[in-house]
Length: 212
Image 1: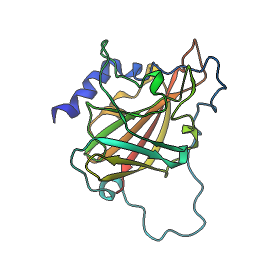
Image 2 (image 1 turned 45 degrees about the horizontal axis):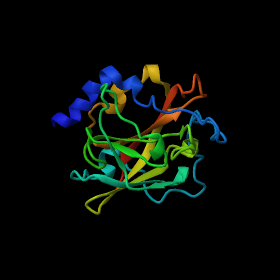
Image 3 (image 1 turned 30 degrees about the horizontal axis):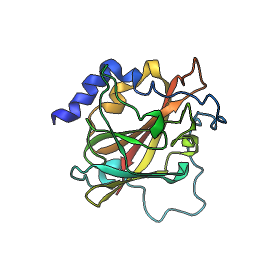
């Protein structure tokens, strides 16, 4: 559908500016290091698995459109609602939560809703001028961790983190983040890197697949 393609076209020009609003605290204590481990994977479980790990293409049945209302990322201590609705700013860049909403996550409304086929995009701050924000513990998330999104229709979409990536905003992977997919996926994006000229130069991106 047209609205699933449009984010890619917009981001192709403006993707590197996705989270330019992230800025470090000026008076509060600093947040934990805004980096992700490489590789960011958990150690194998000591007990044998009871079933084979489902593949993204078969694990989760696509859901109809329904707006997200709550996001939980247990590994990062995140449980937040309601979600903000983010669109495009006046200059054509993707909106980010305001400093006042640093403890909330926003959903990019020009993409799909979480659970639909395609990449649903959620955005939150690592920190702001007021101090640590909702995704301050993003470095605790590893591949294999779950992200749960409650939806307005009463259903819940559970995603499993497949990959974590930290990139310079000047080299934002636009097609990888916004490009069409054959199954339901989720992107959770924040800022990272050491503060330079009042801003964090990187984006940290979590890629996750619907599993149930």
